[in-house]
Image: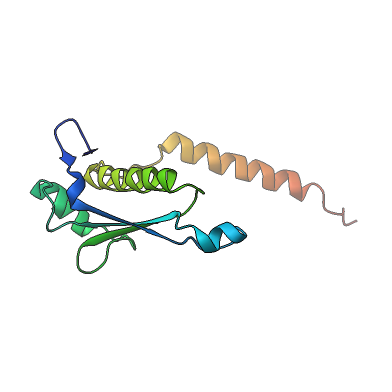
Length: 137
């Protein structure tokens, strides 16, 4: 059972995990041991609430295929158990990030005093630089 929030959780049978061989350096161990984990989670067939599903469908994340399957490959650690925990944690973070509603940005403006101070400082700096010029006699 993967806990997403207090009310929402995903049963283990909806998450498909397979052990595969990891890529990259690792000596003889990398050729013998399947320590990496390939996690697949079908959004459409899951028991998530419809609002969660809709939010996940709207995400433009490369881990979500066009079929609506979340694919996560975890191979950071040498042990399979740590990679499984990492993959589940990343799935949980992805779903939690999808349901957070972004606050609408309210456009702001600078105050007239701030604009005036900025222009005065620019003018002052320009006068200072003009005093450095050669004096023409």
